[in-house]
Length: 166
Image 1 (cartoon, rainbow, N blue to C red):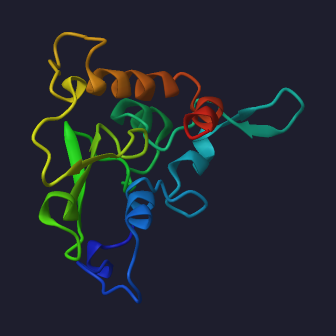
Image 2: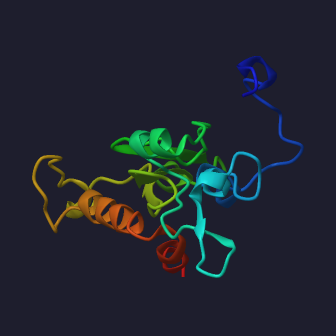
């Protein structure tokens, strides 16, 4: 594993970046790089024809127990952090204040959650975004709906994730 000192704390972009590029970065699982956790050899299983194939369970978000079982390195991808919510602030000074600032909010993982725009002038948000009790499931809660989809993906990640962004 590389020493943390090789990573910069910040970088100056070569050009302005769009909000869509920031979202794509936050959803990054480093697919196709040495940091792609789904490409770890331990995810490969016999295909019944004498070769190996990637397990349908291979996920970029293996649990601690799964990482220990398969001896997968714990390199953290960008999209991994979990929590109640996170956001991207977009400031557009050329527009009136009530619509110039936008919080692009996502619940749970950036990879599986939709980004929801909440404008600076918003006085009220949808009821489904106010309703969340982590101990009691509610079909009226956006957080529970997003978490439900996230958990379903783990049952057969390699196949299910194809349907997520279609």
